[in-house]
Image (cartoon, rainbow, N blue to C red):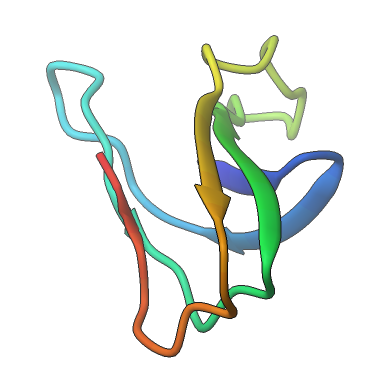
Length: 68
């Protein structure tokens, strides 16, 4: 899985056998963050993005966020 905040890839993670995945972000700036993931197949082709999880931070987030 490739993990995105909006259009920016911010990391990778591994999906479980049931398709579930999670990712703990690093610190995030003030503003809106749209977390989503794209699966990567054996030849490197990306799937469509998952539904986005939208988070709005009134202040910079000093702690990591977890997108599940």
